[in-house]
Length: 360
Ligand code: SF4
Image 1: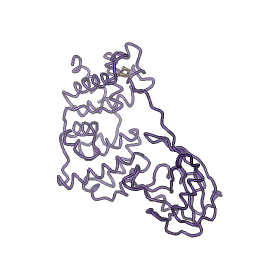
Image 2: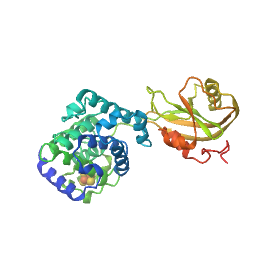
Image 3: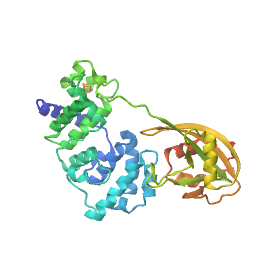
Image 4: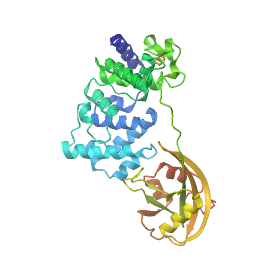
């Protein structure tokens, strides 16, 4: 592609001078890069760095990760959301150890065969650890290159993606492909930001079609956003002395393996109070008192959960029916891998050990 050699050189010069010091930048260990890239898809680099340090200290090798209990892995992941990614990472580590004796793949195409490893992660690790000239296109890279290439406004999203991919591939097809990928990601994260890009500081400014046309912020083109449906739930904060009942989500469900306060989806036409009482009956726990608590919302990819909590006192800490459960003190709650909603509820005033239904 015309101009690719000069653009690559400018990009790498810029990266050598301006790259942030992130803990995985000093390694070519494919396991560590794989962990880093998986974490970096969940959150911003600075936050991912803190998780990365803890994660590789606790699981320094793929063998250590494979040997760990899933609960430990989920605990390290807690707060990042999208726990399916952590489960797949653990599953892939086990698969690599069982089938390859812990040897990780070299080529991106081989990485893709591991559970949970998509095009982006496969390309990122193969290029950074082994120098394979394959483009890793995340949201940051897509934004940068869609602006540089700035296809016509009326062009389809598919055409824009194809142009962006071709440009990315041309840029990595030369010296230091791993650094080119990282430079593009870094540029998107720090200079070519979604709003108010810092074009004056950009090494690709001279080549950027969107900048020339003063149309930077309309790129990348996006499909129309669908409204996220709201779904109501009742959440039972069941207390007996200084303990709260938590239940484990089934492994096959969204957020499987994590612990939460019993949460009941309202049926069509059912209000939250009725759903809460139905949930209590299903658990088979004799209730002494129930009263509504706070309400909160939590966004998942495909829906918005609207949650009404109910503070419940029971006669005795019996075994609830049909669920894997435990009565947890505040200290125990701190140790368990909880869903994000449960962690939010724990950190709210009134849910600590020894507090009554009113939180006083
Ligand atoms: S010139 Fe501006 S819009 Fe174009 S790539 Fe650089 S920062 Fe982004």
